[in-house]
Length: 111
Image 1 (cartoon, one colour):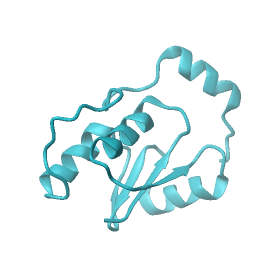
Image 2 (tube, rainbow, N blue to C red):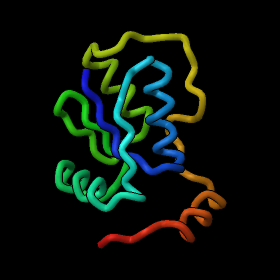
Image 3 (cartoon, rainbow, N blue to C red):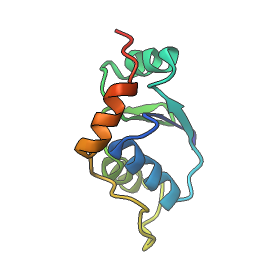
């Protein structure tokens, strides 16, 4: 299975996607959309929208998804099996107000 995840370096939603990948021992390409303009543009072009995270699994784009939604997709399409392993972080939670404040000072706006 080929997985490309368009993620922010630090984000509750992005960390939830990473946790699902770890939970199911899935290899994936973690693509930084904040510090690389070309990566962000590629995500927007492929997904048809500007919100993240976006996860491409074997050519199928899941746009603006949480880790929970990614896991549901993987399970419902028999790409992974259910496991009792817990995720390391919440898989369906955004950033705290403090995390948003930190990103506001570091985020580069491309468009």
